[in-house]
Image (cartoon, rainbow, N blue to C red; front, side, top):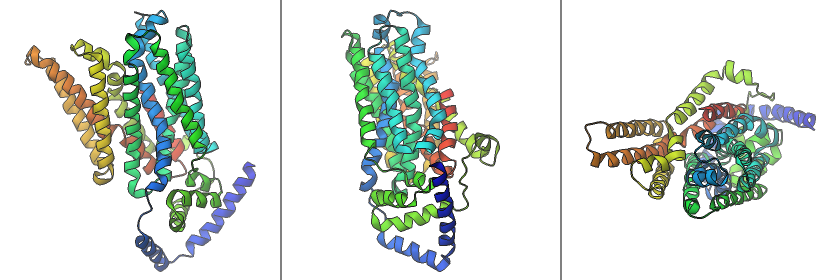
Length: 428
């Protein structure tokens, strides 16, 4: 089967090289003129499929925050209350699973395609959520969280790549922001659903059961979503790639989209890219930039806010419910601002502005702890600094790296290069 696909790919590449070379400069200008006449394809055709893919990001955000309000109840019911090592493991073991998932995400999507990869992402989330919801002891909870983490590692990579490869170029930045909005909605949902956990016995189990629903919907709806035309073309399935473009963009845009795809793949190689090529070959610089960008994103300390905001605000005399609502709203507002600004200001401007805003926020946090600030103003500076930090992060540092890198990497290395970069994300 693999041999037939390789042969088909080789034949198609030979044919398409001749096809492209047949166009002289005048013909290319003519094709561009036609493209200008018919305008941009409708964003509505691909919108629903972007929403389906964003369910993976919603699940990522939900499981990122679900432990925030429920950790105390979990530790009481599973008899490890006061054991800070056990509590830390419950929080962090999903990050270990995320590292495993992201490491193999490129291999998985190159092998089975996006639709099946999304379904494989949903499966451990369903299994892990069920195991966590029915856990009788610490080890059952840890195993469930590890399974969930594996799906969390797959989800962000798949969502970023899928958005890049199926959305029209003129709304790609806006659609890329949808994944961050979905993450913030998932985070807010987990905090809101978790509010009764401290008063209602066993409510934390409901919080984990709830997350199995969007995971099941992701697996179901992906069955009816189109495959990435780029992946289909790489596998030598040109006719299927054209059908996917027609579904995503509309009939009049298929020829232009295929011409662009053919030109981008011209000179590409059918062989599978090796890890050594990414780390030591001529792609090493862009992979290093991507890994550094994700490392800086995580080393900013944003996870401390999402995982332990209740504890931090409690020490400042603010109720955990009010704190979590404020964090969720700040995250959502920043994500919505990114949606509006991504294609207008560009990725670089948002990144610089985002990290600059986080510097200012940390300055407010440091000032609140100094002797120059009165105790009455200390709370306002501390809480305000944390909320500004979340807002600034969600405008740029949160959504931009995944979208930017998925656009920068050539199609042949895109999936595996993203998995390498996201491995540094999970490590940090």
